[in-house]
Image 1: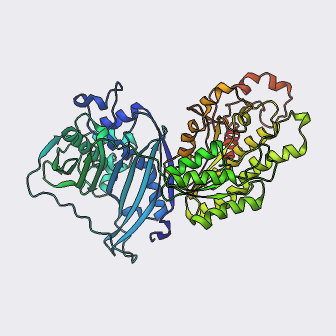
Image 2 (image 1 turned 90 degrees about the vertical axis):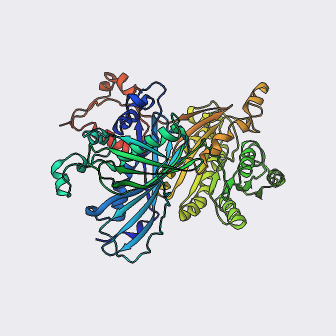
Image 3 (image 1 turned 180 degrees about the horizontal axis):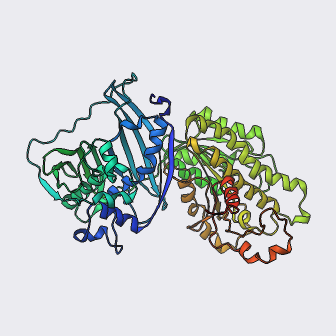
Length: 587
């Protein structure tokens, strides 16, 4: 068995972790917290110990081992670094994804190192932390790779500035394992003896949590949100009930070195500890080095999107045909040129494109403009649109087709070549534009609403096809004043519906920080919410293979129609799976 070196760069995850305040309290109890630091154990004004971040690794490590083809008999958790971007909220959903970044060969009979990096986002949109894990594969060295660079942590040649004593209980692993690490080595005496230990050993990550508490107590008491970085190397095992000491050296303002020792033997259990702390630095969403295409960017929402992207560092292709609101006319270069001039006046980079999205050729030329001017495409905002409103019986086929050609077919014509570029480079962000009319219906707009709902279907497939290439595809339903709505909205609504009040959501959805894909968001007047197609739990009417009559539906109509407990599915397979399971009798 040999390491699979081709796994470098392969995406691991995303994994999601639903957690409540009880999970963060359970973790705190698992790493020795109690009445002495009640902020970690009482839901009133609850604070989260930052090392709780380590619990996201439990789902990822098995996939890392499988992808690398590690010999599991020799696997050890070697080092772990966590860089904190925002404090961890007491509850929510954590989404974690990453990739293997390096393999290092220490030599035959000396093992190998596998390095993986993961990012974790919270359901509130914040990027919480970056984890860099080093796995020591004791039996996988000698494959001819380069050795790892030396990592020297120069500890001061003086007594530590602070020492924190702790006495983990003999039962500590039984509590800590409930946070996710249920490996038998920490609970099963026979398994531990087979592995060469006298008895089950402490989780290294449990000792890691004790150290994190100690560092906070001495350096940022009562302010875990100030922890910026926690790094260390796991060196030796420890038996439950053995007292420990966390030794801390203050190095600089905002930085300390630390290690954990066995208080009985003096042996170092965790070494090379680095702890950095300070006031949280709010992360700014930037697009430096990114290339964005915005269709329909000559006015309204598209113009604001293009300007805001450029202000934050993106190079922008400003596409606009310059046609009339209904798509008629020969078009004009003026709208796109004016926006390009505005961007350049602000010191940004932009080029104009005047092609129509309504043809395959036009969509291809739009993407070609980005490649010729800037060499790539990272972001695509499909914003171009026209209106040709008529009640359904008065809807002429040409008006039906014209609206679909711009909104739905137009998104296809531009997204397809852009998607190809993004797939090849392993990164991309695509934003589609639906509307409240498409999601919920609107009188006299059957062509427009059909096209807008079709875009949601397009997103639902692109999110799946782009998942392994870090291409995230989302949809926005904006409510904003534009030339399409100029004679529809009351005049006193115009100021309330400025495009600038929609743009923050659009920019976030095309940013590197955006953790979600396949989502629809309503946006307008500074108010935002998520829309979703949800499926109720329903009712089983058929009994076995018996054919049933429509009248039988009436007996369970309320249950069939009830949306209580409705579920938003990720793909069709999940929904069909639930249907099939409805006929499976539980054992």
